[in-house]
Length: 165
Image (cartoon, rainbow, N blue to C red; front, side, top):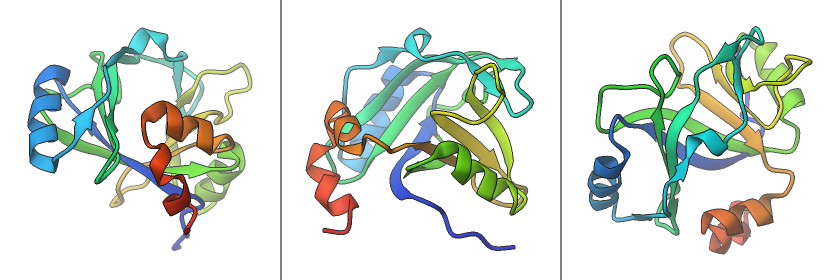
C-alpha cells in the first residue's frame, strides 16, 4: 500500500562515528557549513516503538543555510544513531502538524515506529522514526512552530520556499 508523506521535507539525516570529521567531509562534499554541535544529553530521553528506553545521541549539528538541509548525528553505542562510518545516510525527515496522527496514518500502511521521545503514554510525540522493510527510514518531526524552528536552525530564509512560495 502506497502512502503519501504527510508533511514538508525537513532535512536528510546522516549518522557518523566522528562528528568533527563528518562536519569537514560532508561540508566539503556538499558545499555547506554547520552550526556548532550540541551535546546529545540535552535531548529528551528516547524510547523504542514499544515504549522501552533506548540509548540516545552523543552530539548533533545541523547545516547552516543551503543549498540543502542536513543533520549530522553521532550516536551512543546501542542507539539507532550509532555507526562505525564517517558518514552514512540515516533518514529523510518531514515536518508535520501532528506527529501522533501522522505516525498512526503511516502505521496503518505497514510502517513501524522505531524510536520516539519517551513519554508515559508510549505514543509518538515530538518526533518519530518509522521503518518499513525495503523503504528508507522516515522521520516525522513537529512542525507546529515551523518559523521558530527554522530560525533556530539557521534555515529561516527557507520558510517561504518550504511553504511553496
